[in-house]
Length: 504
Image (cartoon, rainbow, N blue to C red; front, side):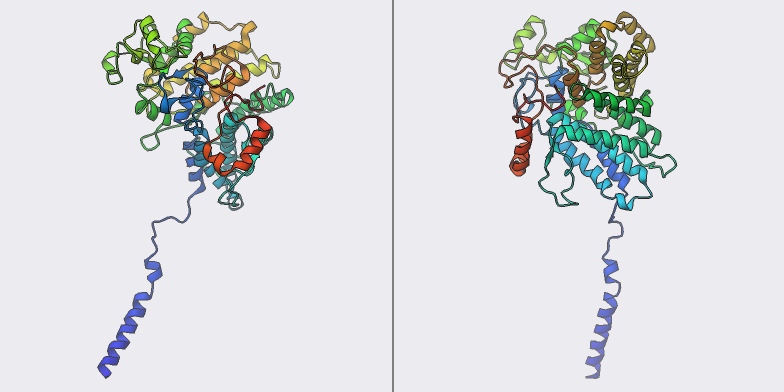
């Protein structure tokens, strides 16, 4: 009996001993329970790059890239509503960018000792919201990104006018509040926490917002632009807002053009002809033609040519059944023989993504001077904007570099003409913003330049000449219908013809 009792006592003691520290033993000490919020900001930065739908819609609308194929790639090539693609910006920016900037802003109370991080998140969030509202018009804004923090599962849609008013406020306040004497967020992947560069980014974005409103609210447009100019703008490529891609975070446009759509997308005739007719050295930096290719697999390096004289852009308005007539007329081997953006250089999977650049900003500044909003030499600023983009080409790839001598020759042969100031400035902006589909399309709508001939495809579903906005996602219409319907009742039909507020 004594022996049995001893065994029982020993068992109990062993059990108690095993339980001591059991909770601690089962805690994974390498599994984080919180992350540094600057990494949330970085996640938002990386996910601010453009997606494949930008190729099929925005870049197609402004006639830079086109495909004769249908199905999955249907979009601006046929002026048709393909809601599997019009939702691209919605999904990308709401789910993968604003989600993370809002996460940083939700921690404001606990980040009092890191005020610069809060201002950086406000600036990047303003950028992402501008892309979204420029794409769709009225969108969730004041209640967006608050599903987890405030359980707002069905956010209301704010008017674009109110969104722009608040974006301007956010950029003004955030830029002013940035303080180099406060902790520097050196882990930031956009600027390494450099306060001066973040201020320039904010002010350059503010200038972009002001110029967007020239037809909707001229007084606010001027006021906003002047404030941005006074604050200091991006005026060198070293200050560009760039997403630097690597093997872990590849360029979505580059991935698309190097994989599933490698042989489907081509430079358009209007874009190639603009560069070719002016002997623009950027054509050699951008384009490649697989001379004589009769299929995608035949597009090999052995027949690749970057010679500007042999580049042939694909004309707008043709599909797979009709493009053959142009192939024959132009003495090409097949539609695979048209020029493409070079996917080994400018469109490679590790190519950087440019959100806001010195070239774009200086061209907008030239327009502000032309409008009499500020002082300066329009021709000088125009030339500077063109040069900066030519210099920027080397940042895509060393083999795309444009020399100073080539830039000089181009500007001498194509001088600034004050009587065509707005047309020249905004045509250069079209070139300078190549591969930034959302910005190229937005500036085309607000400026009307370049003067493109409407896509003549006979099967279009739009009533007007160009697509004015993209349609809301089917998933949003299904889940948040009441708020979507309210937006449609204000804005107009949910189609490609309705205009956003600032597009007068």
